Image 1 (cartoon, one colour):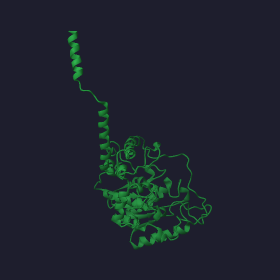
Image 2: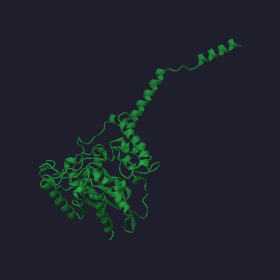
Image 3: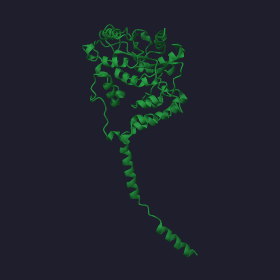
Image 4: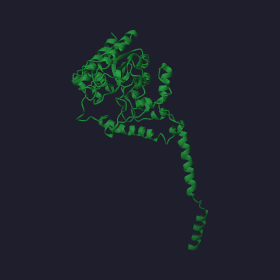
Length: 377
């Protein structure tokens, strides 16, 4: 009996197919190589639209931006993922909604401000009505200063059926040499090339500042950091939803500079009219027929050398000329234009000459609220 069983077992072992580890490794490697290169055909926008926001987690009140884990936020270059995480992507426009989209830099995004303290948050707290509808403001500001960055976001925002766009900007966004400086612009070369073609911008589509990924750089291995960022954005969604934290709020920070250098230089520019990206401004103002352009508030120093410079960013000579040029252009094009440059007292700025305190932001919100409501009268 035992001998017979032994023979059966031995026979089964002889007939069992042998596992060749080397072949398994080779096949797995081949499959990974195929997957890696097949990833070239996977578009970033397809990956970006896969989101848990507005499904498991509420949409964010502002576009993702951050450099520390404590903020439950991060900076990435995938615009589709950024918009997919925003509340505007998950909010179907109601029949009685008057939708206002805010475009601009870190002052609009709200550096050192909670979502409720931002311009959008304060406008929404006012429960405004316009054209017999309820006003709902959406914060699509994004840190870094560039008209082309604003145009890129503004162009995408048009699909969300805004009734009004309010575009806040400042001279620092205008120099030609600043247009591609923003990392989110430089790393969206395909989108910028389309903007150049669609709006006949004077920029060079082959500018080396635009990051054009090679075929290898579009593989899974090369894009693993970007993919990891998309995953992290989803993970942070749970943490943000439970805490409401989307940036770090330090107890102490360096206040905006009041004592200034005795320099009249602005980006080495000698002729503003020839060195500013007015073509990008014109393009942005053509995206939506109901756009209000706002020259945003800034700190006006009364400290050392304040007779030469208004603040860290601007010499008086250059800024005064900019205001004249911008005002003339707005009038010539019949734009809706608010010049609010001196609205906020110097004491109501935080760590930058363009970052208002909550009270400073409330002064701006009052002006913007009036412009929204007066539009329909």
